[in-house]
Image 1 (cartoon, rainbow, N blue to C red):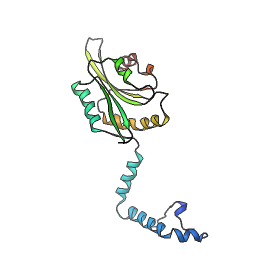
Image 2: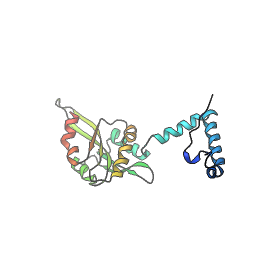
Image 3: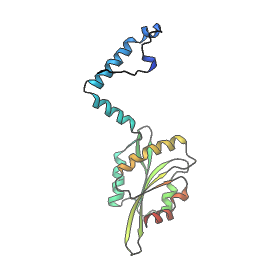
Image 4: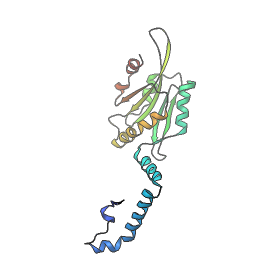
Length: 190
């Protein structure tokens, strides 16, 4: 079985450029032996898991964020929860919670005008059959005036937080306040 190694040009041994051959043979040989031991020596699982972790983008979700969502979902302690990405901790954290008596206007006023956020809102409504129901909305707030870096960061992390927040019924992506108006929630819930 022939094994072909593909090294970057800066690490290849060049027959016509002896200056490169003198500087990097030990480095390229150690890379070759490392590559062979990983691929042929049974440690390929470790290399694969390393690649998989690098391939998935986005931030982690703090345990406090998960428990706060569960309080909203099960105990109805909060009307809404607003999450933000803490770039230093590299995770999604709780920025603000709303008391059960707060209105939807209080919720929308809590969203920043020039920065992205995630939020969950517990929407209570009455059906045509006069039944009291509740649906949880996940809102990805990304205003057009926010920084491009923030938009990219929130877009790549959205799937991760949605996976962690099990029990969300509907998702809304909003770039301006009219896209997350109370009427939009009512239409989606019915």
